[in-house]
Amino acid sequence: MRYGVYVSNTVEATGRKQLIIAGVVTKVCVAFPALSAIEGGFDVCVITDAFGTFDPMTRDAAWNRMTRAGVQLPDYRSLITTHNLLAQGR
Image (tube, rainbow, N blue to C red; front, top):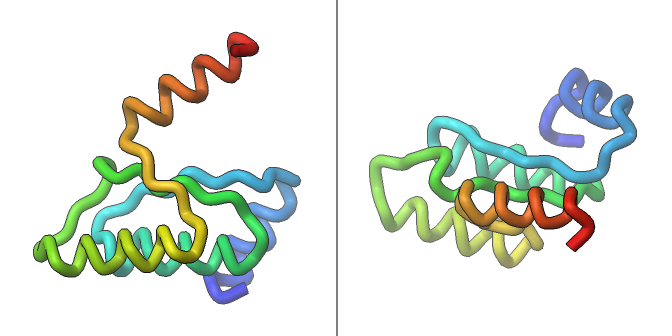
């Protein structure tokens, strides 16, 4: 996988297929790993309010690219609420 042999092997060794990604800069720290993980067969959530960018146009382009690839883009409140509901069996 493109996101690095070490990261790939480490994540795959857990047996998990769902990743939650946050980072510093949308275009680099978030979009590339998210897209690579999707390519590797993972279900990916990118927390939209857990990273930033210097340019809203760049952010929007990255969000569009990730959405088209199948990345889910919740904010942290939505992710926590969903996780809690699933944990309670709802």
